[in-house]
Length: 109
Image (cartoon, rainbow, N blue to C red; front, side):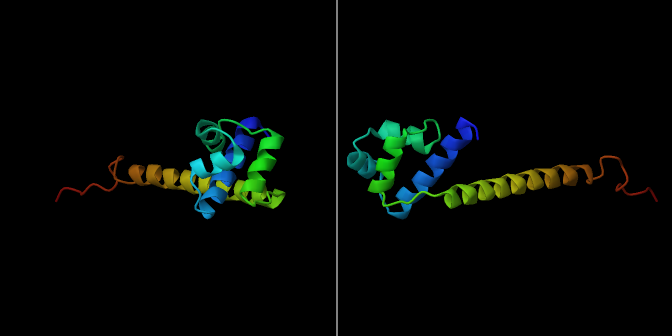
């Protein structure tokens, strides 16, 4: 697994858990003694926290991160990417069926 994907997974799962608890970033930052900028970079997948920091964040958020969370995130993320690709494909196909080749044009009487 590459670093960018790992950062995205950890960040999204962390943000989701924080929001489930109705915590602000500031609440978590104070509890974990980190800056809001640092937490923001983690949640946006731009930084992967050290193992020590990740464990501390998990403890502060009463969160048991497990492989099932990661697997579910990956399958949900893949589903949304496929939905987006299908939507784009349908839009492209719809634009070619609007008579660009003249088949749908009315014949003169």
